[in-house]
Image (cartoon, rainbow, N blue to C red):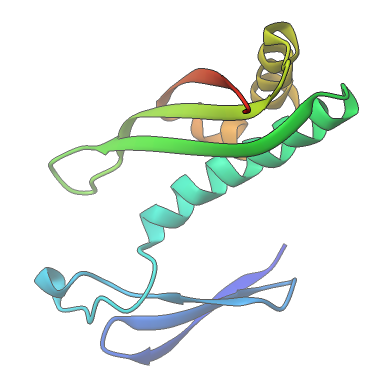
Length: 139
């Protein structure tokens, strides 16, 4: 994989990778930024939940679970001193559907976190990551 950032101005960059997509990167005004893009640490958090979300929904669909809505959230706490690394992360899976089986959800999360998601495998070496889930019966 290849990725790069191209400086625009101040603390504003555009990030690209092999896929050809681009995204804005920026910084908070308190450090001289213009508040005009994702913070790099936000991308770590989005990468983590995006990776595991793709695994879990794929597994649940293969298990023929009737999912009508699916969200994955992460609350990432950071150290107060520089380099302000993540100190712990709490992932919450919210699964809405019809008669979704608890065992299927637990197994899908387990497979993602222990076998398939490289973002989880990498970040869990440096930070405690805990997971919870909610199954909501669709109306």
